[in-house]
Every structure is written in C-alpha cells, then in structure tokens.
Image (cartoon, rainbow, N blue to C red; front, side, top):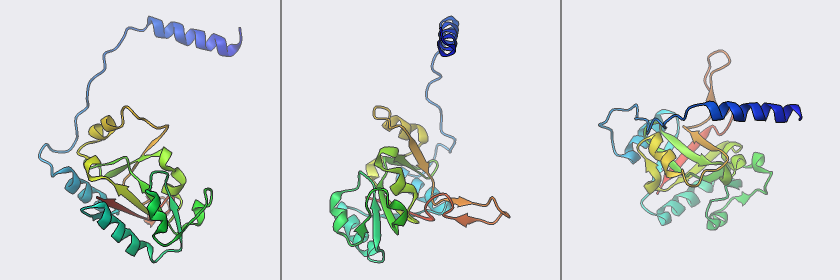
Length: 195
C-alpha cells in the first residue's frame, strides 16, 4: 500500500468514527434589520468602496448608455455572458488571451449584495475580462440584487462554479507607505450597470 493510500485510509477511518454534526442553519446578517431596499443599499455600499453605479430602467437604456460610454475606448474585452450585440457598440473586441491589452472590459454579475456592496462574479464569465482591463463595466440584473450575503449565496446554490468572486469596488492597496493606490491587482475603475 502506497503512502497516499495509507493516509487516505486513515482519514476515512477517522471520519467514520466522528459523530455527525448538525448543520448550524442559516447565519444572520450583521447589518441592522431596518435596511434600505437591496438596490439602494448596494448602491450606497458599492460607491463608498469607490465603485460607481449606473441605474437604468431597461436593456435598451443600458445599451444606449454603453454605446455612449464605450465611444472613448479602442479595445474591449468581454466576458462569456455578455450579450453578443454589445460587440457592435464601437471598440474592437480583443481576442481571448489579449485581455491585458483591452482598455475596458465588460462582464455579467451573477448578482449583487446590498449588505457588503459586492458584486457576485462567476469565474465562468472569464476572470481575465474581470481583472485585467483598467476599467470594468459589470452588468447587473436588478432582480439579482440581494439584501445579504446569505441570500446571494443561496441564489447560486444549485449552480456553483469553480470559483465565485465578491468584488467590492475597484482594486486598491495601501501596502506601501500607507498611500492608497487604485488598480494594483485589478481594475482601477469599476462601474455596475443595474438594469
């Protein structure tokens, strides 16, 4: 029996002797019970972290805003879930692997969280599109804005990707000299477009 087999056998044996533990149940939110509606709460928390929120009433209004915003950029990186018609909005879409050369990226969030001001990002949408361009636009469905982290995680329970990211505004760090710098480990500007 190999060392690996011996270790796995010992672990299985130890697990069988352990008494079962009941799941503790749903954890509570740390915010006060009296909180604003989810979209307003998300907007407050996300903007406090340095993000920007654009609220539109329809996909047509969203597309109009995107066309105007993208007019200032030359190269675009898109996540897998981004509607294909956005490719016709102006900037040239970079080839896969070229996301580092994009001026702006567009991704689709699985949801947003009011409690923390976070975007719930699915790795299947494309981590490169989410992290490499200096400006990131994230499309958010208003029906997927959740009050708490627990609600957001519950919403993806049946369709979990290999990784979920909670993005709470632009990348920032004050590691060196206690000076805040944006865009160190990801986009320096993040705009959530809620439709």
